Length: 178
Image 1 (cartoon, rainbow, N blue to C red):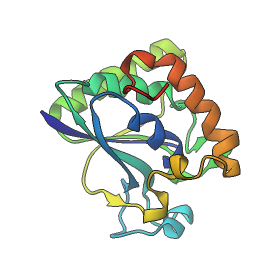
Image 2: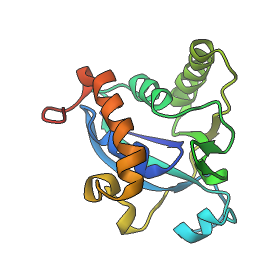
Image 3: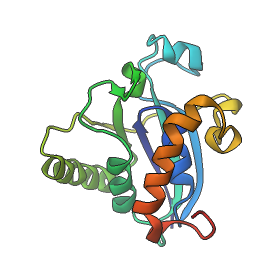
Image 4: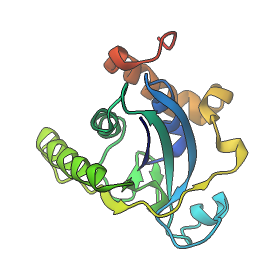
C-alpha cells in the first residue's frame, strides 16, 4: 500500500538524502508546506514571508516501511527541541513540523512526539498540523546532496549526518547504501 508522509526538520537537503535510502521509500521530494503563499519560491521562503517550512514529501510502501518507523527516523535525524532552527540554520522555514495526511498519521505522530520527549528529556517543539498543500521546490534542490556532495554545506554539515544515519539505521537501508 503506497502512502505519503510530509516532514520538516531543518534544511530539506539534510533530510531528503537520509529518507531516500530507506527500504520501502519510493520517492522523496524537497519542497515547501505549512504556509499561506501559493507556489512560493526558495527566496520567498528564506525571507520568511510565506509561512512555509522546508519539508520533504516521502512516498513509501507501507507494507515494507511503516509510518511509525518513518517517525522514529524523523526524530533521530534532527533536533525537535529547538524552536525555528537546526544547528546554524535559523528561521521559521527550518522549524520541526509533521504534516499528517490522515487520522492514523495524526495519532501515530502524537505518540511519537510523546516518546521523543521521554527519550530526550526535554519538551519537543515539533508542530503537528494537517497536511494541506505541498509545493515542490525548484529543480536544483531535488536530490541536492547526492548531486553536490563536495559543496561545502554538504561536506561539512550533511556528510557527518549521513555517516551517523547509516550506522544507526543500517537494518532498514536499501541494498548498496552502506
